[in-house]
Image (cartoon, rainbow, N blue to C red; front, side, top):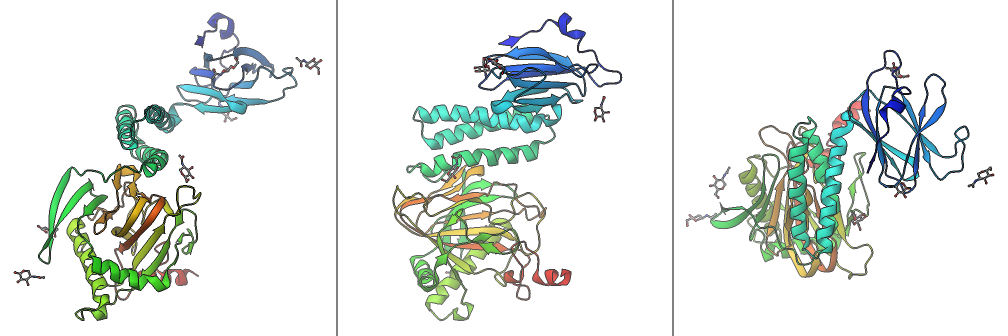
Length: 448
Ligand SMILES: *[C@@H]1O[C@H](CO)[C@@H](O)[C@H](O)[C@H]1NC(C)=O
Ligand SMILES: *[C@@H]1O[C@H](CO)[C@@H](O)[C@H](O)[C@H]1NC(C)=O
Ligand SMILES: *[C@@H]1O[C@H](CO)[C@@H](O)[C@H](O)[C@H]1NC(C)=O
Ligand SMILES: *[C@@H]1O[C@H](CO)[C@@H](O)[C@H](O)[C@H]1NC(C)=O
Ligand SMILES: *[C@@H]1O[C@H](CO)[C@@H](O)[C@H](O)[C@H]1NC(C)=O
Ligand SMILES: *[C@H]1O[C@@H](CO)[C@H](O)[C@@H](O)[C@@H]1NC(C)=O
């Protein structure tokens, strides 16, 4: 319900001071638990005067001018206007479409045309989230709710934000905002299966043809599922190499190093590639074969043309379920493996990842969820999830579609062999001559 103030009564009080910008249409609404009193500061006397009282669902519209000040206070407070208890003030800006919402604790949200895009995005997400909540409550599957939420947000952003120049950054923000909320629903759904691809292709390598599911296909971001990518012998060789050196995983610390974090809870072991064992029929040869296959596939899928020299080790990562009551299950919260901020590639930075599924014994949870791309991969022994996050032509990184999580492992064991691929490394400048900010160590030393 909109409270209408008689213009005749207030116009006199709201006359502009000389040279002030406006008038601007301003709406003030009560979004709080308590009644709100709106006082207007008379510029000539400097004294507040009661302009409106806003009860349940009420708002008031007024034409006002730049620098006019309104005072907002709780109706219930036993205060005189001279001696205020709790209050907030708001100053009218020189922009159109001003909306002032008074929230809990007299917190003021003041929007205008300059902040519109930002708030439009938040509103759309809120609105779509409310719809999704209702659907979840009505017992729809979380997969279906997620799809509906995505199309809700996409549909609305297209119509609402098209005109606004902030489109790209807003959509990125939206996707992140949204996937944060959907992440938990998706991971908690035990029945969810791997996303069904719209397109498939075959990849032939050394006389073996493998089926590829193209789950997400953009220039700067691709997500593929490769069937029968890793053999049982290869998995066994990796597990044997990992066993004596398993330790708790770490994350980059933003200062060039790494640290322990609850966002990444799993055991891992880095496995050096024993190229010297190639052609010997040993266990090490299996590992080297897999490694070369990873590069063959990556180059085929992306055109990066990268080589095995100077690259990171293979990583064996193992997640152990401890049951539904475990408050802190093994998982890896949403993250990008390299830069996914749309910016140009930094030399030596990661550009693609291969996740090979080796063990999924009695597994509950543990899916790989690409929340922003609406892609979910359920671990399947022998298969691999491939994703890349650099456009090989423009050399610009993905804008967030390959952000992914390792869902909490509730029961069973998940073992994966992961490899992160980089561009700009070689024998002379291997990956570990760069720190986690992709600054080559010699550059740091020069600066110091
Ligand atoms: C509003 O206030 C600011 C800061 O005091 C001042 O710089 C500006 O000129 C004022 N604008 C008008 C239109 O009075
Ligand atoms: C408000 O405060 C005055 C002075 O302290 C007091 O006399 C009066 O009873 C109070 N009114 C209410 C409704 O609390
Ligand atoms: C999702 O789960 C994580 C970990 O339990 C929690 O920290 C986070 O707040 C949850 N997010 C939402 C939106 O519920
Ligand atoms: C990728 O492999 C397929 C067949 O396996 C082949 O037809 C295609 O030309 C390859 N593409 C590139 C870019 O190497
Ligand atoms: C693939 O098959 C062809 C023809 O049978 C054979 O000549 C070639 O050596 C095979 N290549 C590999 C890598 O096994
Ligand atoms: C603001 O006014 C108070 C007192 O009338 C009501 O109790 C609140 O419900 C109302 N807030 C909203 C959001 O309408």
